[in-house]
Image (tube, rainbow over all chains, first blue to last red; front, side):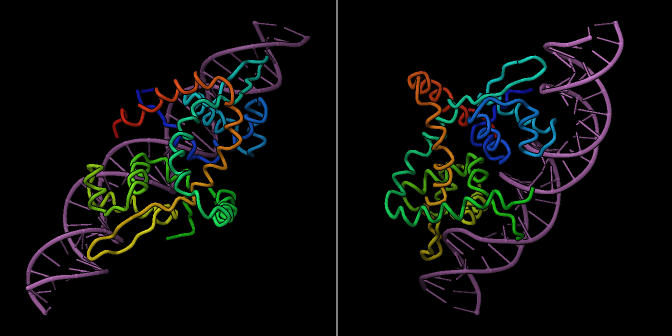
Length: 113
Length: 113
DNA sequence: TAGTTATATGCCTGTCAAGGAATGTAGGAC
DNA sequence: GTCCTACATTCCTTGACAGGCATATAACTA
């Protein structure tokens, strides 16, 4: 593995990884559980978890044969910090914006991949 | 162009596009200005702007031969909404977190591409 | 209209990230 | 030790995406 560091932004570009973060935020989970929840194969989930681990977004502990993953939210501060000046930019017209959000929220679920 | 819709998360994965948003947030800019600021070629900037435009993150107006781009922040609400539950997750230990952020902030600038 | 400025877009190439299939590795029970 | 469960990793393929170069398109002026 070379010196390439994957930024939080890149990590979060992948919808399945965001979904994984949602799940491990709620509670610690094993790879198998995540795979079942996502209806994905174990190897692909493992690969995503590796990316998340290396980005510092999850931590893992071993419990018998299982590995349990939990959220480590610190790297998301970068995202929050980037977003901060944009919050000022949408200060007005919040009703309109929230309606926009509701329509955007459907996009990831509708997109085949 | 097929039905593929690029999510905000995917759009923001590209550091140059984030940089473009920073610039057009500050003030309206032409393609040429952005290209100069980014030290990138005009066609590549144009392509990024197309992605941003199609994601609804920028708006354009024509001024003589120039196109001036400005920020449209509404789609970022999706990002903010996604991030909201994670803010609760990092509530404690904020000093440590901010130090983490400072070190993260160097990553994009250091990474060759 | 021709000429100029500004930008969008098409074509091409190279890189990379995702998943599938197979297999290696780790932890435990008997 | 063998066998089982759980997961990580490798190898390979494929599609997406970024930039470079060339050119088409848009807007304006004389």
